[in-house]
Length: 277
Image (cartoon, rainbow, N blue to C red):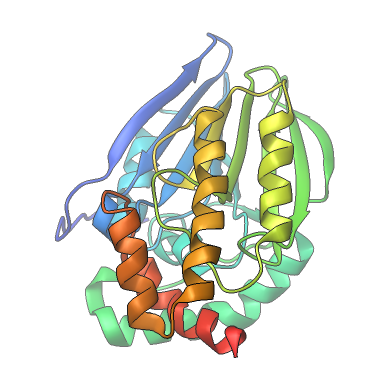
């Protein structure tokens, strides 16, 4: 592993989400202009479970530094879906770990990962990791006890991405939903959001969980889900009444001037308006 940190970018923020003595959960969130990517560590008694791997190499290294500071081995690293901001930054920092994903995500990453790495390296150079850490193991939906703690793995379809992994920790009341929830951050929208809204509503209505860990933004409570539902509705209304990408972006930024990850709008707009035609 290469522990060198260039610190070309502002540092990420670290949160201790919950500590019930038996288990601790930590989140690392990149700065708002840098997508506000959220990655997480479930700290068990003798091992660590990590979730998602950042976009920029520096934040992948900061995530590894956080894990190393806990002085326990990394047993598993889960990648929840195949968007580059959740796997591209981890290659240098986590080349030595065992990476898990849903079977379809594992297959997809083996195909799209090398292209994404090459393309982003060409555009951003040393800000991007030099290599990939792709999944070699698969996870299937169901329950599993790891280190004496119950994990619930779920496959959720047709949200921000066609397929995504959700990880729940019922003993802690934490649902790690990643890009199903953007917390005070602009969402990556490429088409209809009915399935997405249904998934958000299901998470909100599950009384077993009071902390929701997003893929973008700080750790959240259930109120963030209501805000996310309102946001998706607002985006739909703006899309329906605007005539082009620039008008859409301007209206969305005016409606949510304080939201993080505004750069995501530029990335998804060509897809969204291509699908609108």
